[in-house]
Length: 130
Image (tube, rainbow, N blue to C red; front, side, top):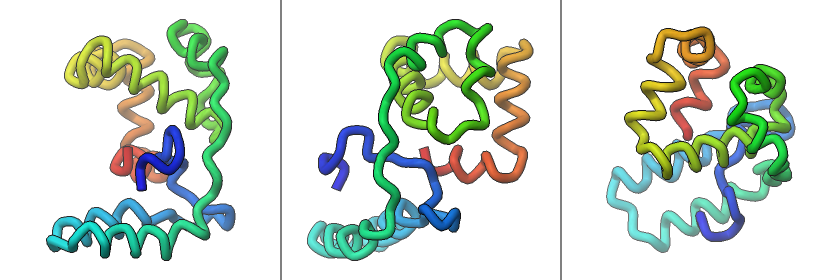
């Protein structure tokens, strides 16, 4: 499943803008001790309506390191893969605890904005799924 595409995680929506619940579906089956063959079958049955992964823009990933440019990319779903890779790299370098502290709990403008976005309706589902 995950090895099928680089950066398999996608924006939590399908083309029709309805919620993408494949992650919830698979995790529920896993929690219920479904064997690997069932997990794969259910994933295969549901992947047809998933949106293709958006292209990665490495320039944007680099720009996200500059906090003055960070807000230029917010609220545009085409940058989702760039944010995903950026935060994966940050976690690899600093650990998840330090990243949460820096980008959510630090108390500066960037962290306060991110904290508010996490609890502002449409953003919370994306937080749960990543």
